[in-house]
Amino acid sequence: MTFPEIPKTLDFGAGDVVEVKYLEQVFDISRRTAILYLKALRIKPLYVDKNVFFSLDTLKRILFILSKPGSPGFIFPGSAAKNNPRFTHDSEYITEVTQDILDSAADPKTLAEMAGASGRNADILKKFLTNPAGRPRKEKPHDG
Image 1 (cartoon, helix red, strand yellow):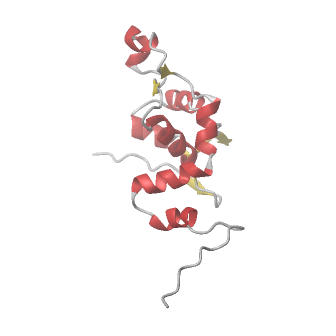
Image 2 (image 1 turned 60 degrees about the vertical axis):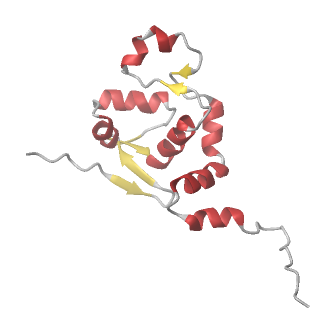
Image 3 (image 1 turned 90 degrees about the vertical axis):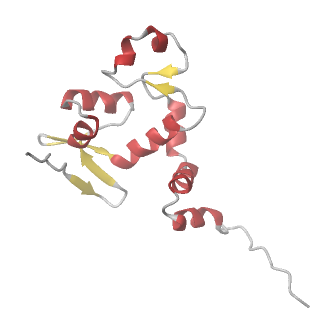
């Protein structure tokens, strides 16, 4: 039994940058198809020597937006749905991320939604719900 090779990970303080091998293993696709996935999702890869890296946080944000209720369906490169007229003639399905989706993924509110949806990190959500800078605190009524 052979174990898959663990993709290299770099952390520059703003989230993980992972080797494209991550996509190859998660989706069971070739390196070429993984790079096509990044292109369709409009994620610019980082080329370092023979390695290709991408922002895992950016991928998560875009996939979160694509999977929200009301979002269009997404057809990944190499998917069987690309050749299915049922999907290709339906304007609800897209094959490349639009600027609106990128803008939504970049919006700080998306982080709060992701934290709330995961239910795992309430501290992040609290930061968005507490008094933001510049807003006066609400005074509690005093008991007499």
